[in-house]
Image 1: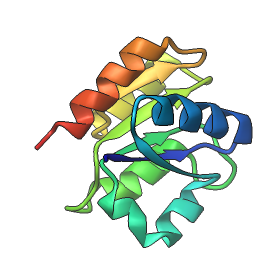
Image 2: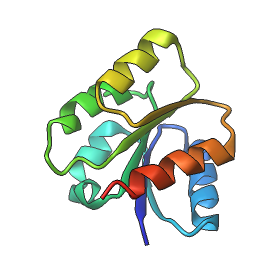
Image 3: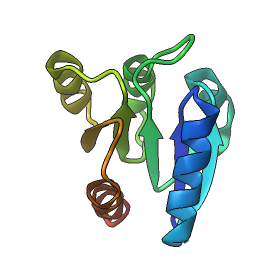
Image 4: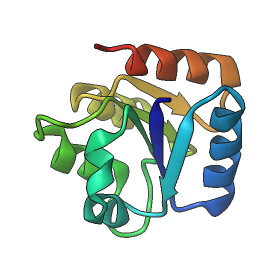
Length: 120
């Protein structure tokens, strides 16, 4: 079962995504900050990371920059309520596989996750 780790400072978003992903068979874990993700060694074994852009402390783009150079970095998908073209461009140029704005449609997000998980 593929492991998807959700990094978002909004607990309601984390729970909603966990429920959605569990309903289609993914194993999920969630954390509330980039710092919390980095302190958990398990992130390297994830099959996909879903990151928010704006979070307290380290934002999603900073987190991507920190982990993106790691050989073990799993595919990253951004899901954010703070979307603009510059942020989208920076995320995709930084290595993100996909970028979605909240509120999001479930099917395109699930398709992007499935594609990221099937990367090997």
